[in-house]
Length: 267
Image 1 (cartoon, one colour):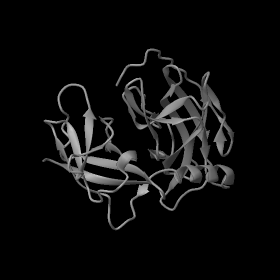
Image 2: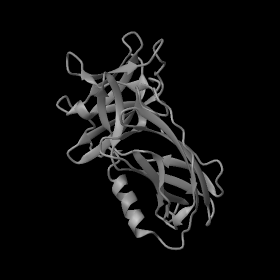
Image 3: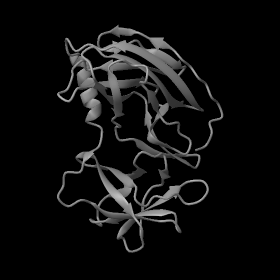
């Protein structure tokens, strides 16, 4: 990852503006953020929150695999009471190449849903986060929030906002004929090859990422015979060991974004 030329660290703690949201925090001259909450608890004990990021249309933040110059979003809920873990649900990003560097980004106003695992009826959330905000330069910012969750009455407005963001996130592919087959990694060519089960599949939007890692894979290009998509691995040093790991293939269709997961084998 390219090191940003400018680093700015900000920290602030805000108590909730009311039950379903925290106060906005200005974390950069071009960005502010807050947390919003559904104030409902699911049968499995989880509850939905979201990170709402307000930026100008020319300012960006980053997807789960940020790219060559991007800064990954990091959350820490270790100081919370009655919260046992979280999962971020990522809407489909924009893949862009700027000044020769590949990144996966979101521009403007962004809502990132977060599923919180609540272990009590009155959980208290203490959260710190680091994320990148980029306009002319990339700036990592740090923010902190404290919030008392309540499940006495649902916040209909924020619940709708969270559902709308979830609708932009990839779903498991529902079709009987899946567009991708087996995947394998060739350390000699440093490329991940994924079989194209449907050769006419519009593959241009497909993003490949290694589950649980920040290893960056470039855009897939069809092999000479059209039987595979070949994703170059962008990594410094020797070829990474990808065999046995899982690759997630995220792609856009006329019906919305979907994803598939494949185990990576060897040639």
